[in-house]
Image: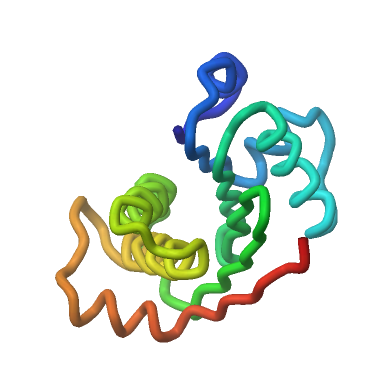
Length: 148
């Protein structure tokens, strides 16, 4: 699920397997700013407590936090020229779904999802390129495991 506002709140009742709020959407849901990585992770864990299995918090050029019950991964993208942010969240969500379908680890899902999003922001229009450019971007993503 990738939504905001009242739709976000109502969708949580369905206990979606995967949600991808951006930082502003998560702050709006919580009702206050999330100033530190620890606060963001705590807010994401609160969503896990409501029955969500994976929370991905996108933070623009700062990357994203991928939070599950037993693991937290921070993915930091390479610096790129942003042409459009339209669809970047959808691309990230698509990468997560693709990774989960392939039964990839959270780290591998984070790398794939972030690569999808990076490619999306460097292009105008729909669609993602094929394997060679995707692999090149994946190789440039920094992953850090955050102690649970």
